[in-house]
Length: 396
Image 1: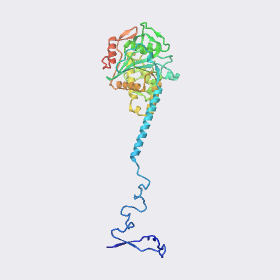
Image 2: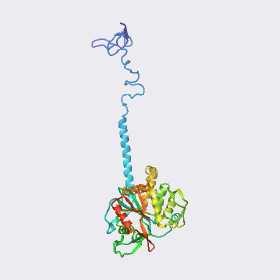
Image 3: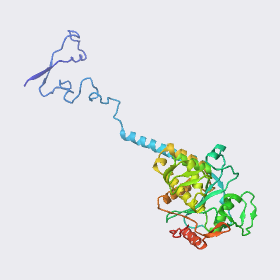
Image 4: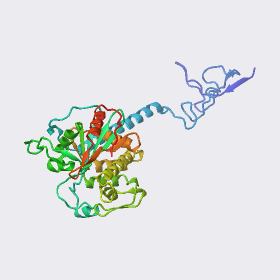
């Protein structure tokens, strides 16, 4: 058997032994090991056959983590990244909620309304468009063709019912003939007894504001109104502009110098100024107020559909300006919450998508120049709404 020779340093002298006489620099005698690599720790191939590379401590090749540098813990990194993202989303959502909630103008106190009907199934919103010019400059009044009348009146009124059988949007013509009942003054607190006098519906708002309007509608319909939402001219135009305009299919050529409307028939995108002119026009339409309320329904449903799209909801650069413009402009009742408002918009979107019903309050004729409601149809309509049944009554 061949013997392998390996030279190494001699062991140090034991106790009582003297150092070698040759000094430190003289080579020592070779030690021998057999060919199988046996003979102690200092074999020639020690560490070589294990894959160790000289100059790379720790037994790893170039680029591997050395002693004190463990491999990355990817599970830990993914866990903390997920926690950070979730925390950021929660903080942003909560912050947005409180910011939006603080912007709601809760000015209408429905607790002042007396002799209210009993609550039914579902939720009923009274949506009012007023001709308020509050905060508008003279230039804005000119651009929007609003005039400069003091105070404010109702330019449009709608009841939106939401429930398990779809949503129903009912326009109340402002020329509707209604009775002003007994009521408590919203500011004075004084009780005014009803005398049986009949007026146009929008006169109730002009006389004592939202509370009397709610009282009058509830008295003449028997339907309890759960929430109140109002928007003025400027706010309406700002919301439309904030979403980049709203596409509408104009049913006919319209030209109305009083509202500023000047449209050709067909699909087109309306900006805030044009949208306001469209929903306010009445003199260019054959059916006057009834046709105007139909156009208002179409536009508000289209606006709600535009606001509720992913391109608006998921885009913070579009969502926050839209929310800011809308919330700054709305006047709501004291019990209205953001979730109630969101429910209202989604219901209007469903009407636009064909999942709900839109109609005018049924009219049977006129009296004293005012529109007379069809009493039998109104009673049946209110009963279906109270019971949250599918609406089968048709309007004008």
